[in-house]
Length: 231
Image (cartoon, rainbow, N blue to C red; front, side):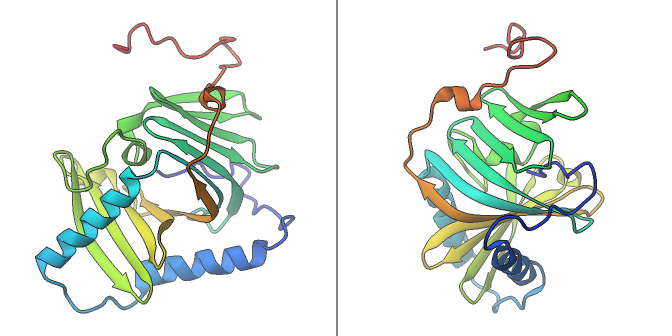
């Protein structure tokens, strides 16, 4: 998912202890996955095994929480906490001064700018976020296609596109090998702009209140109308 940029265009000051090393690690992961030397070409069977390993890991996650650092195409950064509850639910709480809130409530991906009081509703499958919250994640499936599997020391990355419309862009999932964990994703939009989200201090198997993924539209006073959504 291409998470929203800090609309002010300013990098958020390093108020959080350890921010420097997180930024350095994010840059290192991004450099390895985008520009690092790939290992020698692997047989198709080995590549298929790598994709299956990534799928099994992602499908094994029901709940997930992590601190994230986002680096936008212009170099501006934002931090916050990401919560995931499969299937369908995702929440990104951006740290101040960012006014952005992102919630996937099982039906929509909702982008809310608190400062501008603007709300946007997107279909989950219309964004790369839909991949991560699907009931069953199949990276090489009917509508998704793996275009590349890359390896660098200690890192594996898998690049996925929408099979029917590659022009929508691509998402690259970056995993550490030992332990095998999702540590970053990079979304490349149709214009070739890359947004990178790196994950830190991740934990799984948590219990969340479902209200964490409920969005109350400030203009409506309640959540979105689902009467026409088929749900």
